[in-house]
Image 1 (cartoon, helix red, strand yellow):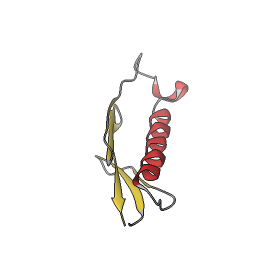
Image 2 (tube, helix red, strand yellow):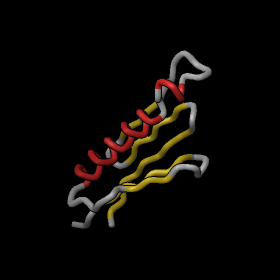
Image 3 (tube, one colour):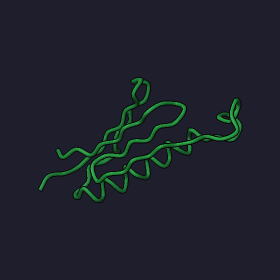
Image 4 (cartoon, one colour):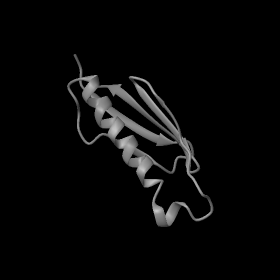
Length: 84
């Protein structure tokens, strides 16, 4: 069996991220990737910075075992697991 990493990018190319380590299992990579997604979603909901022209911030999020995609006012972010 190989090792796993995850990578992320936004649809406009302004955001890129990747796992800080390699994982022995896809589940470990998924759990780390999911935490990164949640942190990114938190970043886009800062009280003083992100509610300047709206009353609420909505997300569409789709989870699969190899990919997580979330969409908000700031773009579409796609996170994928890769075997290396």
